Image (cartoon, rainbow over all chains, first blue to last red; front, side, top):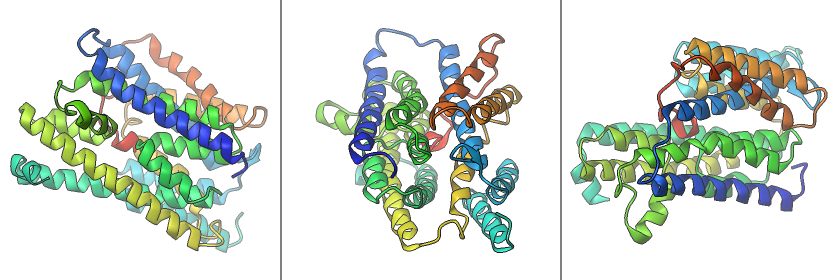
Length: 108
Length: 238
């Protein structure tokens, strides 16, 4: 862990408390407001976009530079398998296997 | 627990069991990835119990491991978890329990428990499905995370096993069904491009948050994006 433990614990506590607040507030607000479906969809879309950006940055970059070819190749294979509805376990193990084999062959 | 089993039909119980098994496997990869990115075992263990929302935990671990601020990571995680607000709005009163039971019943609100509850025809069965799935996930997610973390700690050269490729692969598997909507796919690709373009210049963690600008692509036209509550533990997705 590069960050100090205290900061990480504070971040974890923030995430845990905030998530519980979301879980509770919907139930409490239920009687009073109706949440527009469009807002719900935008929130969902925001989550998918965040996660897609995380996929791209963790697959392709390391620090501020390029992560090498082995890792994105593994993720690409996983993406194709996931798109073709392969089981979760197959998708994830394929990513690791392709990357490991490429590194074994000397591709960084 | 026994009354839950009597209330629910066998096929529903089997589906809930399968969903929990899937959560267990995602938990395994979560624990293994967290320790191989340099976190001590207690981080995925504690977080899986107290946050209990897979995708946001992956996001948190990913941003902090890349050197981002834990607060930026928590903020990103909260954005992903904001969907729980709409789950609370969607559930009929009484499903999550009364008084003290509601304290735990609120915590076990997740993608799976809400989906199974909403699919049941009456309040009694909604409540039973919600609790069966919620408690199942409460056991399987942290259980998977701890076992995965133990496996991850036992491996020394995680790079040689390609474990660093597992992380993006897990997230991709969790969001792939949302990406089948062409408009969502376009926005996600735009977000990914923004984050990649910003990575050389901005501190870690910020590029992913900057990707949210891609939401603007979806604001104007009426959306045909996915209906709520389909993403695994979320995701999703978890």
